[in-house]
Length: 255
Image 1: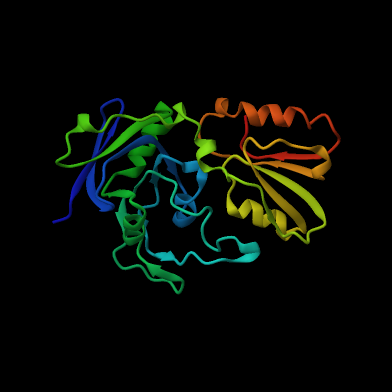
Image 2: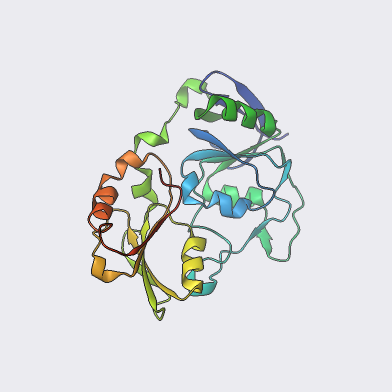
């Protein structure tokens, strides 16, 4: 019989289901995504760092998980970062027999490898409606047999998640490109780098707190990312010093 677990929301609402992936209890912010495909990309998206990711599509995992192989510009062909960033995955039903030409393992196996738990058998649309109506909610996935008090609610917005996911050193992609783009990594996705490089840009990805010199770039790109932007004061300060110059400036999902 499959191990069972329960998702407990901060208001006391409970969703029980069957555990897959890693046999561990976790906590974090509960969020949702309504896409029909793209779970490998979503799970590795740095924006979902430390979040319990809910997928509303009823059947997940049916095309398995591909190998982490390099594609264009030395970037992972299938994933958005080097590892699973989400703390847990919550779904309606897990496909037990995945089939796809690129698949080398199942979603269950992949989650186990990364130490990430999954919960299936959940009414994800009911859960999504609750989150949509209530707003941001904390939750914890507790494996049955584990005392709930041993798994405290954890608010990931109380720490600097951008610092956790950002590259530690500058890195250049497509060095032969003509247009020089500096991309500030606040949780950048590989595909954002790829899209810039495909258009002929020389993309220099720098850490979130890296000093900026207007002479180093023709355009500045600020990525989106996880957590509370109040921790990114160094980023804000660095940007303020260069936005006064007439350079191409672009950002994603920043408020």
